[in-house]
Length: 120
Image (cartoon, rainbow, N blue to C red; front, top):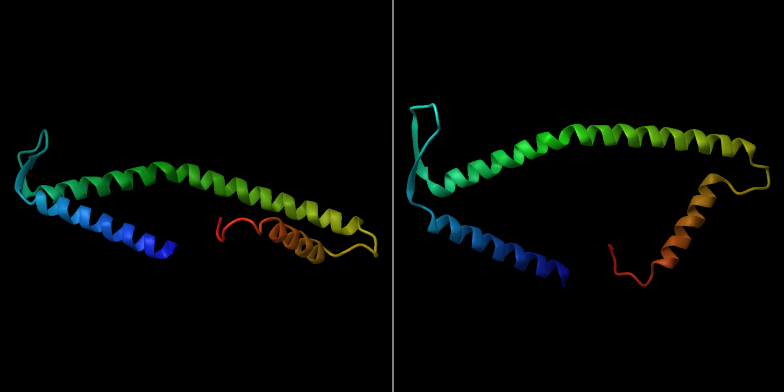
């Protein structure tokens, strides 16, 4: 049901973009300040090009933040590993292993989330 709605939405979006491209097929001239070169192309080509350029600039602006977050996540994973290693050494012989505890925790989480739809 949801997949069919997604495909309907995608098809509708494609038709809207196609209609926009067909409606803006007129040839336009673009000249940048300081350059004598004049470019001629359909308006939709320029719009798509500048939209793509804006996406690239936005992604490049986010790159430093992405790498700093990945470094922080890596540090936290290492700290959790060290913490789990020290807990494992302090456990008595009769206690449950790490795998058994995580399996029990996962089963408890699945049981608590039965009223939610799949994937939420």
